[in-house]
Image 1: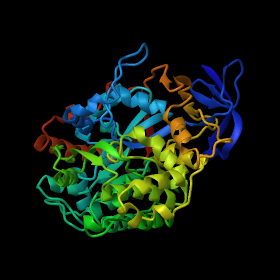
Image 2: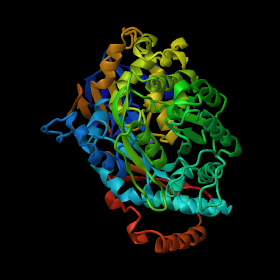
Image 3: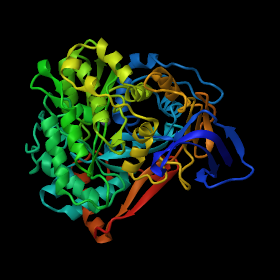
Image 4: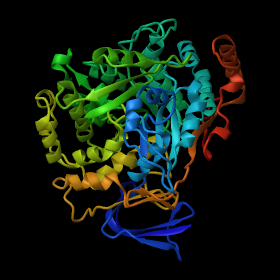
Length: 565
Ligand SMILES: [Zn+2]
């Protein structure tokens, strides 16, 4: 399998390439120095980037499926029959597995991580991931309300907590430690929530502050490839920025295992709210961006809101209950035994609503006020802020102040009064777009062969039908949006899978998970506790819990020797 992508304008900022006319050589699924006798594809006048990397999107698992059952009306959108290549598809905020793969691939994405994997749902989640074509995949394992984690941390047994986390990652075939409303989702089991970092979790002698700090310490001791991926407490609450800032401060207490972030603040938009009631709801994006700018231990993803109808879903059950009580819309809730408590409810972001307008502005403010694009990742927390189909629109907003102004003018005046977006002139260039849609994600996840086009990288490439030399994105933002909606070519693992916005070949990608080794003796001790918890509390047998390789599409373990003994 040899291929040359000839003469495109290449953006590969991780390797210092910014719009140079170059050829990309591909052999056996990897980028190589040069090939002979390869098929050539002319990419003259087009934009070439590494394949997109999605770091936080709810694309598989229990919540997604609950949402599909709950919203049959959503299945009426994007309905398309099968073709000679693709299966029939439907859905918008809760797209079918097949549509998820095809749609990401059409936008030039080649890798996607599902944002929250409750361990008890791991088998099901991997079965769904297996069904999603076109992408390499991974899952973030939720641990922020896990009984054994809380038990070990509250007793100060950090080595045991490390060994359990390593076992849990392997058992769930997970890639990283995710925490969602630490302590709060467990409290929800008792009809409660936590509202500050120092509230006590019912029946556990521990606070959110101690859980977050503990998980970061586990992550660094295990030298995991990604950092802790945190959805902090008080998501979506007015005035929550103080909780967020306090949470970000905790990164100072942790010794990093290497030079990179120890925490990813996920869907930061939902955590950057000022004011003390919905009447004076305002943006605190400046405070959050300042904290990120002044620290080398933090990165964030946007959690951008786009106007329209969507479905919200999160392992933060109390938040979903609160949201449904504000809207009066249907909602669902699940209790995942000793692990978490997710919820689902539909939501409409309206241009007429003062709150939605401010939320829309906050996501963009964060991306524009954080100075380094290496610390920013474009997400909508699909489908919470909007379905991922809206990414091209967000790219256009980042590149054009004029396009933002046009939206701002239509919105409720609160969006101008209670945010600073209107005063920000910054416009992203093509390199910055490359950072925030692939390179920063790959770096944050520790995926060395993704997010760039250097020799040895995976041959995952996106070619967009737009000429960066002759296009002024600030003015021609509609052309930018069109170009990023459908690639001229998407190359996955060295094969052309999308041509002119149509899927021409279906591939299955692989599943990435982390296998972190700890001392055998320690692991045996921890497994005794795990066994006891299963016998006493779980409704399933321990033997029916871990995910076997047979559930996975071409599994690829990222092996880490943690040195924890
Ligand atoms: Zn999420």
